[in-house]
Image 1 (tube, one colour):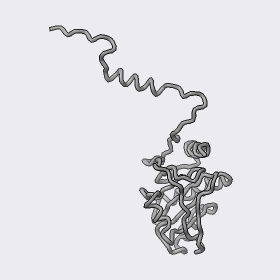
Image 2 (tube, rainbow, N blue to C red; image 1 turned 180 degrees about the vertical axis):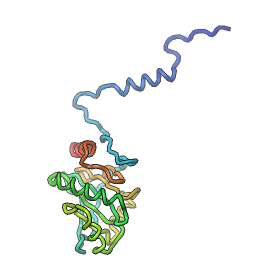
Image 3 (cartoon, rainbow, N blue to C red; image 1 turned 135 degrees about the horizontal axis):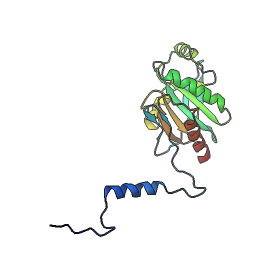
Image 4 (cartoon, rainbow, N blue to C red; image 1 turned 90 degrees about the vertical axis):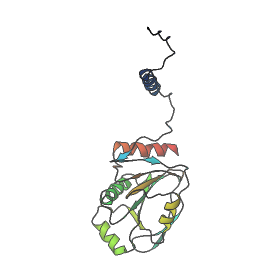
Length: 198
């Protein structure tokens, strides 16, 4: 028995669906339209992940490397990277120098707050940092558990190290675990995206 031919336009094949999807992705963006999604930024198996809902970064009561109390917060109009690290973390030995280089390269537009989460022995922390090139990095210790408390609300520690990006409006935008190359073109595009979102 012979099958009846299907009228054009009534049958959807997998090929036609894929071609339509590809065509829709290829539609050019209107002139001047701003992308609402940040550009891709990856580090090994990790990628920059958005945080929703976006909350304002709280002030954190920490200690500096000399044992003095310090209240740290994001500054309006500047991007802030809040980095959580530990002395036992091998990847932190790569991440902290990268963040120090980034902070030195953009001192007028970006702040980096590096918070040690595992040790209250300041001498041990200073020894750890002494072996790294981190002279330009603002390092603190979570002596009072302020960062740990905030982490249950907005800074989930899903890997070590982990860096949260706080936008120019003071809201936590997203995070990336691992040791990404912030000085790469992809890192520069991500930072520029959030500078323009302000």
